[in-house]
Image (cartoon, rainbow over all chains, first blue to last red; front, side):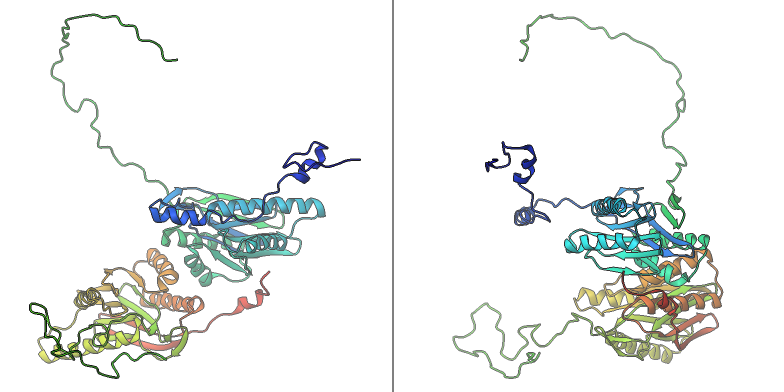
Length: 289
Length: 261
């Protein structure tokens, strides 16, 4: 007969029971340090700045599928932290997701849902649907009530056709023919509202998304650098990074340094400096052990 | 029940109780001792507000547009508020922000124009002159902590060239080829800048068409806008205000939207 001895964390009876007695960590966010942090802030300690993507991301549905676009600047308040970051994340072979908001949140959330979706795919034996990814993302984000700062544009093509969703940090979703998110979303949305129509061709759709992202890059300070594009159709995915280098680093036109030989040397002389040895001393310095 | 801003009952302070203290300033009863209680007033919040004004310079002049809605907070209250004013044949003025402050300044400007006419010396208000005067007025008011809660766009022709200037409620002033105030700065300005970059010397027809596209776009995406608007065009031949124009919205994409997931 087995008797299970309740010693904290470790039992001596069987290895399989170890997990059952181990302390399981409580789920969700821990708000224990909030009061301490507030006190520290009042004392003058600066809060570490979150690495945000301060972005322009967008997507649209065209004749054969989805085109997703994103800029490539990541900001830390007013500093550009990353000049060429990748904002279009892989969810599955037929589904990709652009992320705006806190960079860590978008990265980890999309990776988590990607792995959940892969397990689901192995379980069902079918190509995953975009609405499944949408449900998984919104259910997770709602659980955290907006504390996970991830604003996403999810797009993909599955057996039921092309689908495009925008997902907000609090967990609400919109299913639309064209969506934009991020600080440059108004500039990009202006471009879409002006020129979007149903059943665009592939080239027209790519140009429209590129123009929308460029509107964000040149008119919003939180977005910049290059344009990344992702074209998803039923058969294949074109992950084009970079699609366009909208901001090339300038080439140096000249130098201020004078070349060697600018000042003409008339004559040169090598002199020896005479040194007189006054005293020599030998001292023992004990080694530090 | 809101307390009234003026005193309903008057209680005088002690006139000669123990006498005024020698060397101290004596406040006689009945005088406005507390300046902000009832006497002077300052603009704290705008009440009836108007949304963006857009303008673009083209080859022969300036095109400016503004819709005709006066919002009372989120209520679309007054649907016939003209916000573009013709100053003279070479100057137009557009305004956004508090409508009462616009009417106040508009009156003052009209009086000054009439005075100018009376002088009959061949001089009239030029766009840069008006822009400069407006900057000083707005900055002076903000320095008194009593701003005119407006953003002005001054457009016109000066020395054969088109002029376009912006003045803010805090006295920020600048000139540019394309300007949009309020929400227009986020939505319409990228479109305007892109079009001007591609074609610096637009014809009037192209400029008006560009402005029409932007006004339609603002009606789609600005929650405090109306599809009824006026367009003002200034060329060296003169200035005119066209409108009101009612733009048709295209809701074809409504068929593509069903539910939220």
